Image (cartoon, rainbow, N blue to C red):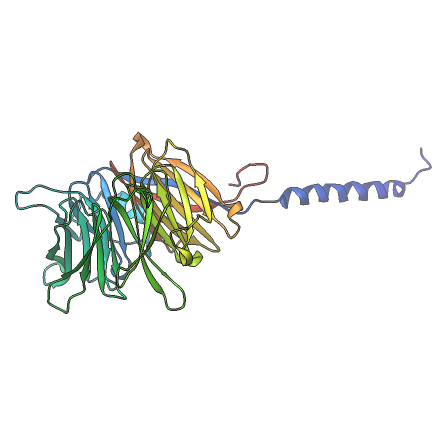
Length: 399
């Protein structure tokens, strides 16, 4: 009507404007889930064959790679200055000579897989356990031509079987290595002298103790806890048990049934005082490292299915969360975000090609706010990027 002024519609216009602003604000401030960790493959190479062991030598800024063919490569870690995958993508490992290429072989030139790698704290000595039932000791020496190089100084053995794992105990100046159902302990020598065998610890088959299969050992893990940083050595094996010793004396503390299949991997999370074990039964179990005894029960567990065998474990710390990397026999990598409330733990899966078995992980923190992970598997090596992705509650991914 001609008698009605525009001012009569002003309240309606204001209300409409307010509603539009509220809708826009709701869209902008739509609740996000907690940041989710994503894993994507950025590079892959089969140039060196199957990679059975990886070790980050942080003190020397190097990565040590052991292969199924018995070759040991030492390559420079460039993750602080550029993504590792970029350097790797410009050249495969064999297109340019690595810092060091050595071999674990017999005088008859028969090569054996490298199953495990460790070092002393300053990185001057490397230990490589292999299928020849020996631990090769490599000392770092100055070379006028190539600079620092590794020279094999001694073989520790023979063990009663393949050396599937080893642990360096710098506090007690010992090295522990496993072969079949025995743990061999070696004494740290004075400078220039040879390592000396200290003791053999044997695990006997015992149906009473829960061992009805072979008592062969497959993995070792050193654990330190408490104000005095008490040291423990843990071993898991074919019979599904986990054994516990005092590291310095190898006094047996106890053993307990953990998995219904083999215990293939162990990993210690010191920030959470948690020991993780992965088995052929497809389960990932977490144990309180302060109370390991014959009656231990897991404080947290995941079951990924009885068709999956866990073959490798590692972990990284990301802000307040711990990220566990689980490798399997079918080329699947499972990422478990372990939060303060175990009930909120999440898992994601990434499948590599050809269902290739995962043998080893090597996390490399970068200067770019992300984490790169080298993955050794039956066909070679790949580089994964571990990053963050934010998701709306409706599942839509934010670019």
